Image 1: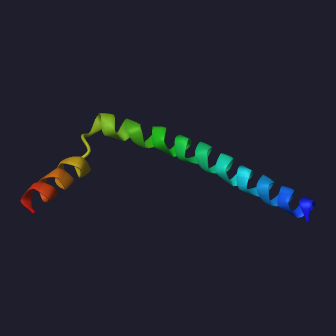
Image 2: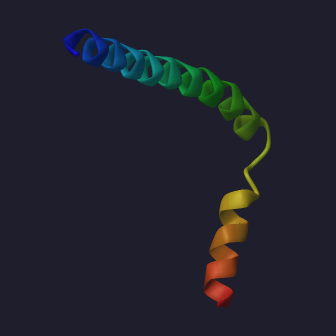
Length: 52
């Protein structure tokens, strides 16, 4: 039983670690686009909220 529990914990740790680096890698790649052109998403959301 102990062996199974240890294996399960190891799998969860690997998933969390693999998820973090992936998001960090994608985030920086999308940021440069924002510098070239303003993000029309944030203003659109604000306008929608004010209208309601």
